Image: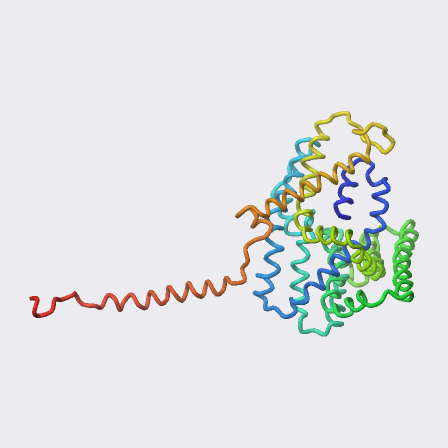
Length: 377
């Protein structure tokens, strides 16, 4: 829901100035790191899979919705900008870059594919070695200026790998008693994380726009690239409090049930809400010429708060539509494709059947013509 709220606040004029956006901003460093930590914990089975099992049981279910729905979402937004903002329609290269480089709304599905492949490749490494290797992504920091997906690898791959390779430690921390020392330690780390952010803001205010990157001789990085590293450190410091908060929410009966329901339907909600915002908010707003939206308006249709609530409802409808599409034969395969687990056995069976048929065929041809018994001649 935090991601949906962020996108809603970005879409509605002055939405980022609302209280909801400010609260969401505080929670922002917790949301995606916790998502990738939990994703890593649920990926421990990858360490026991073959490469085919990895593809058929996991990667296949990431790739199909990503490859099929990304062009739709990107194309819809491109159409809107061309039709209503006067932008030049994007060419094929734009779509290929968006799809192949993960620069779109559905980037999390994109990065989960290489994350799982890297996890599988480190299955025989000691846990600490595998986690340490995941930090080598910072070597590619100069590339972040050209493709911000690089920053996603830098910030989230180590967390994903820690969730998988150190899952027993994470589970032990989460399930152990909520002692004062544990709470104080997690809170202190959280404050240090925000302190890291604050220190960066102070240092970067008068800092250089470009600087040499010592891990890549001759390469330079921008201030925004270094901010990616600062975010990585800050988010890791904040993870303990995120884990404790998640465990605390799981103890609240009705809230826990609601969050679990949303968690089971994350994919339809995530795929559906940006499409719904384009169709139900951006396009109608383009037709409503002269409709000004601001924080201080007393008129409902001009109120930022009203449109935030409305866009949250639109996003829910988008998720509901995706949930419905998931249950339609064939169309539903675009969100939840049919399993490939038994495909090798079926292919081998077909090959064996064809081979057996080819072997039997000559034997049938060598039979002579049927003759009648002698007493019937």
